Length: 313
Image 1 (cartoon, rainbow, N blue to C red):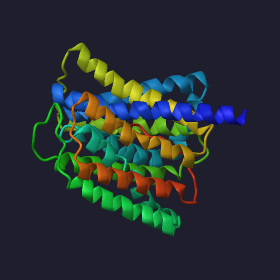
Image 2: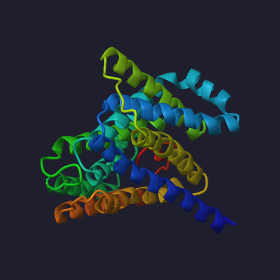
Image 3: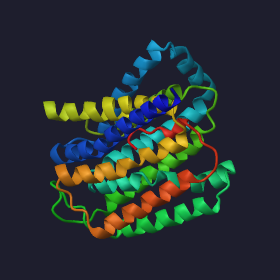
Image 4: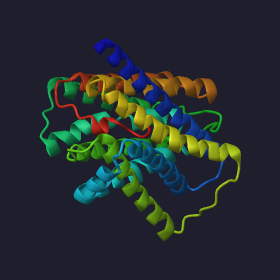
């Protein structure tokens, strides 16, 4: 019985990972094919995700808990929304305008190593030798990958990818802050906290769109809206539900390593479907980053489920 539950949990986690890896491809196609404001796209994505996540909360009669967490934890939810939706969500999406799917995925998934560095002073979590080795290995891999060149695909014949690389790396840093802050919100189911944070963050995005008078002009085509619905409902909605369901059956530390297959899955899919070129130096850097992540996840320490979930990790 325990074995069946664990295998089912890993299956749910793997399904979420597959979806998250596809986000980078769909996002790359969106920016390569259509013209739309990135802030408006981010708002639409999380609006759809938030509405979808209300469905499992309503069916499990947790809307009251959602209202309770908003009343009791609104200060933290403002911070979670700023870093996790307004910040991270926008940065990772906009990075795909400048860089390739594989590069964006790798640098966005550097977040666990940032988390280790932030949790040390802010949460007094010890950094052992294995974690520090993982961080150093990941930093080496990141430097190698950033300077590797490449990034050519169906939408980019040549040119630098540094702006997009840095945006994706920034999204990973914002997600690390979100992770550390999220550990302070206790006593509520993870899905409740994630949903509340999405609505808080998306309210900030809408406010920025209105104050900055961003162009709310969107293509009226089926492929565009199908892509927006996919990155919203599927990658930011369904994938979150699958991942959180997996966390109820499998330890966060074990499941976390499965989550970072996303980098390798994105890389393989980008080569096949977007004809992306993967230079050897970038591949070597990616292996180092993934190795560093695995080292940190294998290190003994606290395991927190809530923010092991992610909207596009």
